[in-house]
Image (cartoon, rainbow, N blue to C red):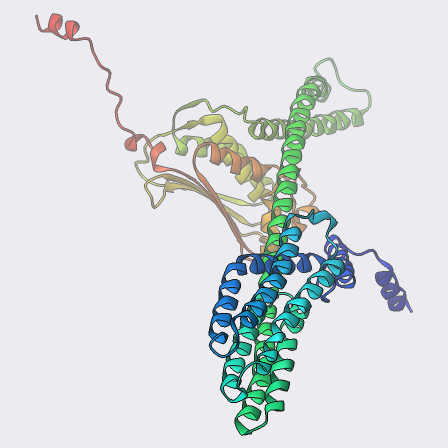
Length: 508
């Protein structure tokens, strides 16, 4: 029953953004098909009809030329007046079609009515097809035996030209070619004879072939328009997504700046009363003004002092992080020795390591030159790394601090422990601001999750690199690497330019 209720709840759950978008798209496409005259989409109807109108307008002169040539050829067998009259009727019907096509191209696209324009074009093409079919009447004015091949050839030319010109509007293709096919085939059959029967059959087959060809061209054109529409839709969605992403990024940057300003302001406001709390609790703990009548008061003062120190360290980390993110953390650079800083940090953390029974080992490379950097920031990097290692290393464990040259000629700080390690899927969380892994949430020595992010940002300010490698049950090893450009023996000496007059005066 619980699983059934869960499935029912899932079925009633609202769709996501993608689901709603797909549903809206499906509804829109269904509506387009219902309002389309060709069963595709209304906007596709417009583009297909636009192609048809353009083809008819563009082919007006060539079609008139073809009809004139056919009339001239027919005049060799029929009277010139009959051939000219037929040509005039066909060209006049073509002008009607061209006139409608021009009106369509000049009409307002927003008022497009697919059904009305389709009816108009089909009616005009029907008139054109009937005018062309009058070709069969030539058999009344000439010898049938001589005229049959000519009518057959003229019919095929008319069918082919109309089928190609009207392929984007299938109903127009049918009505513009079927009348001439029927009339010429009927005339050939009426004349009788094997040759005429064969020509009639070929005419009908030609009609079928060119209708099939026009259908294939229509499908190809429709597929091209569909792909173009999908591409335009994709471009629009990408543009919309980019705009939304830019807007979200601006909001995130504004929120981040506001957060950093808030943290910086609150950190300054909180440090003042905290210093007073720490100072007075230290006085009470050390009993400078006399012994406490109740011994527990001294323990309480010690707890207040340690809690105040912890809170002050947290606020200092918040302040450092907010200053770095706000771009206001300035390095006070000078020539420093990583070995000396590491030795000081080791002595500071040694008492804490001994209290947990952890062996703290320190080793360093020989003849390491000084480094150009901020001593306070580098000290904070080492203390954060050692503090994390000692915090998560179990009793009787081992933490190793190494200072040596890196492979590229820079200098590197390495801190390795044999603690429980960090799962691979939690490393990214641990390196993010306020991020804590599952082990950190279970340990009694919880922190704010700011130590490693601050180390990363300080190393970035020094153009260095921070790497963390960990494996469950095998411990964790971190590397803070300073670039070769910051090593003093890699820096070019500063040559001061002296005044030429001073050099001459010293020489004299």
